[in-house]
Length: 112
Length: 113
Image (cartoon, chains in turn orange, purple):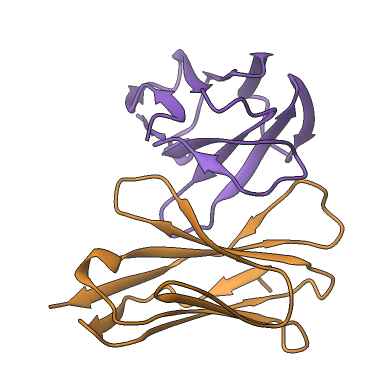
């Protein structure tokens, strides 16, 4: 079983719609969760972090965490073509001091 | 983005060559990382340095040799690589190893022929 799993996509979303991305993780002791965005040919950049159950909103982005079900999701409201990228879910396992485990990423395509 | 700079951007090398990747960070961070990103595979952590001291070596083959002369510079020395080592090599930094807000460089696209 992969430690952090994401659907590779592509997730095709009409402009203005909500893009919903999911991520599941295997280490029940994980405490910190992150979403990175990576444009084609560019480096990943951190867009959201979440540490406790529930929702966290930042602009058009909402991260949702459910530790009991071991999943974290990212919602992108009012999707724009500039949101087209690969979104990487990253998890800090409970026992690893300085190691982030990444999922394979979900490619999102926002169509005008 | 000029916080973390990697050179070269692209590198093609034969299996018998020796080359080095360079990373420099201008953020005043104390931790630096090497990650490998292969097609259709998750980002893989290779090495972690904290204040020039290696704190993690994630079971990386010895044909990859890191060097951290100071907290601003990180190198990855390559020798006798295999074609399957072709990938995007990303350098990252953070304030400390307890800070997981990683700042990535733009990477070096390595092709081993």
